[in-house]
Length: 113
Image (cartoon, rainbow, N blue to C red):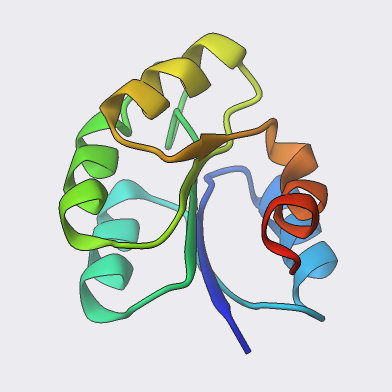
């Protein structure tokens, strides 16, 4: 089974994503940037999805995305609900972007999972 690391601080949204994806992917959640760095450094993932603001409302995951670009060869998906933040995350190194609630559909349509 393929694996996805989801970096999202909203537990309700994270729970919904886990429920939507867990039948097709092994889902590893990270609620903080520090947790995401620890998880990403320890494991190899097929996909990584990163929210723009973890936690809060200010874009703060760009350094994480730059680090992931150097250490993760697979798709890294910006999943902010704000289009401008997604664009900034793509500029920082994400390979794809979608609205966070569209992640399950995006993974199906783009990657067949």
